[in-house]
Length: 475
Image (cartoon, rainbow, N blue to C red; front, top):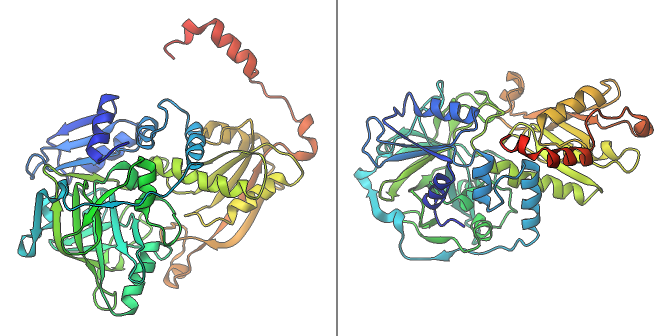
């Protein structure tokens, strides 16, 4: 669909989904404008002529935020509802087939190459994304590339990168990620792990990097399937890793074992909407080379306070895995959604109840899945659109008996980013949470006697809209 980020941005511009901004200050304006525009579900923002930097060193923010841009990036019909997008993506997955990358000798990212004393991460306009961040994060919309030392497995993941010095950056790779598996293999042998960071990759590669693909499967192969053509990669300048040739920026280096070198990292505004992670020692990336395209574009994807997000694709392509897992165990699942975007905090499942205990069964299945910070699971009837917050709140307010409809499950998996981990548990590395499974369905035993909805029937609504179509033509 899109060979690089620029092709996507050109298409977004054509459909009125891109806004160009000149003269912004990276330290004062970019982060705030990104947040304010996300709150309004506005266009992607392409910053140029940034104060203190040469024209042509650009930043793109919120490229995959809106429903329309998400549809564009995934090759799905424009104008669909979010639940429709999830269903369409599930249908595409039926034809899923891994497509390996192809190795080429050269590419646009090699327009400018820096090594040795020339290396300086500060040449890029890296914003202070949030007001109280502990520094500037060059890696937010970035893809980290690592290779397993024992096989041909190349892993791509989104691991944040904070600038410490011109040739040194802090990197956070959480314990449950595939990247951490690879890092620890090197560290256990007393070796530094080669790492490449590609910033501003094509939409398919970025989307693939946020997926939970099986261990041993490269996200490059997933990206190739999304795009319908193999990802073109080449061998990096100093890391020996395969990097996308159409990346905007590539940083290569190595991550030494933490017992040899670490640096305090953070705080950073997390996807939970809090500075929950604090400041703590993290591994570092020692930069060996940098390359970039002419007029490079730094992709910024700073976490925002929910329900705002900078990446709606996370939910559209992530929710189907929950739906698929449910379909393997129970029948008549009609929809799945995550209410707080990019966090899995509140997962809503719509079902057509077929037997006593059906709703509880669905809730317990979701509660047992390894999601990020899944605090609440809500099960609703099939007349509720799980992606419509008003629908879900109506079900919660009118179909839940707090005494009988809520079950609490304790000591479930969480992460260090969880804002509700108390200091004593955090100091012990004990990252667990409780979960509430809420049955917001009409009670099975007397569902047929449940009060009738006030809303007109679908047939009458359609008939009315058809008869008075001129009245609703602009609404």
